[in-house]
Image 1 (cartoon, one colour):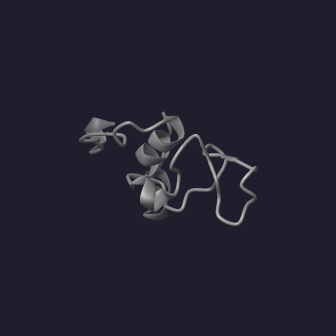
Image 2 (tube, rainbow, N blue to C red):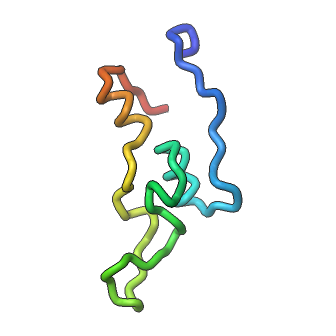
Image 3 (cartoon, helix red, strand yellow):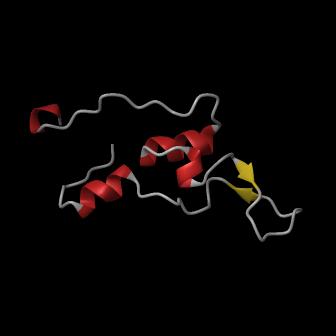
Length: 79
């Protein structure tokens, strides 16, 4: 991949982040305030307080790096 010009300088998750938040941050390059995943379990606005939602199942509010590359005509491979 490096021979083809692809290089990741660094992938740093949000400090102290739990799994869902860190995964969303690494996938989008955005902070939790932008992608919307703030924990493994969270409360979504408009939902009853006793109905928690999994941070792994909510759609991201930000484009992933993979989607951005594909949109620009790049061939994308997940490793």
